[in-house]
Amino acid sequence: MEVKIVSEIWLRPSSPTPPHLRHYRLSLIDLLTPGTCMPFIFFYKHDELINPNHQLELLKNKLSETLSDFYVLAGKLGDDLTVVICNDDGVRYVEARVDCEMSEVMSHSDLTQMNTLLPSDDHLKFNGTHLASIQINVFECGSLAIGVCIAHKIIDAAGAGVFMNAWAAAARSSVDDSTPKPNFNSSSVFQAKNPWPKEVAALFEPNLKLGNYITRRLVFDPPSIEKLRDEVAAGMRQRPTRVQALSALLWKSHMKAFHKMKELKNEEKGITSSTSALYHTVNLRTRTRAALPITNHTVGNLAWYATALTHHSLTPDLSFLSQKIREGIAKLDADFVDRLKGDEAEAKPAVFEFMKDITTPLSSQIAFASWCRLGLYDPDFGWGKPVWIGGWAVKTAAFYNRVVCFGGSEPSPKRNPTLLPDSITPVSRNSIRGKVTWHNGSCQNNSLRSNIANLSLATKMSPVGENYEDLYGN
Image (cartoon, rainbow, N blue to C red; front, side, top):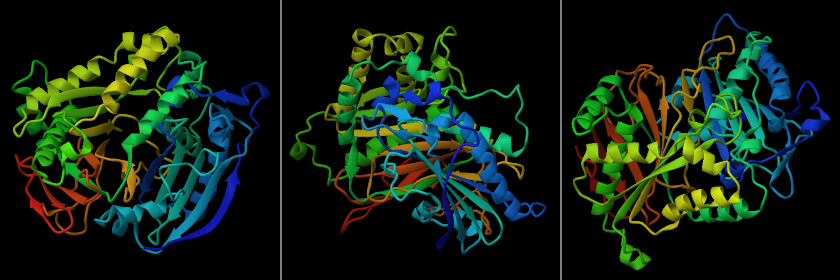
């Protein structure tokens, strides 16, 4: 697949940013967020009734209008990395042609091909100090893929959903006075008046590892998910959510794999703990008190990691693991949010409690993020909602052992679906997909595969000179 850049401009907001909004101070959570990019690829099927040239012009013009409300994205990060200078420099806007049909890309097992559909060649940093880049890719069949990279310092996945839906609404000319406007007021709630958050943020860097990685796509259809939820619920007081049940399954599989991998020699690394840690991203927007000016349209970083710890076991119980996850998430309640938004005496201990968990040497760690119910499958520019959403496929550096759950549709293959490794299975809107980046602790390649029929996960771990089959059992 070859992607050829046709044009590249800096697209500015259609209306200038007022003087009183020219300096946007980052919040406490923004400052603690790693300086990486949030990469998304939205795939849209070709609508034969719409002229492709009209689509391109519409996307560009309406993005310019949308940036007037999302003015922070068109700014640049100040030298001290704590303030965005909202000077309307604009976003990098690229139009490109792809020499194949969209279905070929979505059905290909090598997810790294999709990286060329993104406007940034490095998801671990944003280029210079500018904060957003967008690439419109046109396939030979007329279908589109919109690649979006936004600095994680100023936005999370929920905020990206707000932005994309606002852009789409403008394209449909459905924006009026009743349309909710984005607000950038998180820094007034989660204030950072001293430099300590920047110092703490540096402690996250050890979780960014260089090595050989592989990103795989797992597909779970609705019947399989419900069967798994039933199995997990048998030993719980409350039925788990879809994401909690799948997280427990993958955490269990992760621990089993680490037990059987002879290359992982914790004693040589100075690790004596037999503890496994799971971290789960939690959206704080729905966990704040009603009196706070935080809504679902607040743009910024309003997420935190719930932590669950357990001792390693070859036969961990799914109900037990799911309950651990639920308990960890439950701790991030309104009282916790109050501590984060408090003064340094309250916020600092809350932050360091979490930092203690992630900086302590552990046998294994795995992180989850759910992008379900964040509106990412809703942006309709006038030719339908995205048929699929992709992201960055990691190869050389990553926050390893990370799982991102997507809700929504999966592209249908031309052939009949099979349960072969890396096959793409058509599923419904109630399905969940996972994008998994695995690392085995010794810079070797891993590939993770899903067997949807019996809810087992099989993996062929492929370190140099040795294979491990079926480490992820029932």
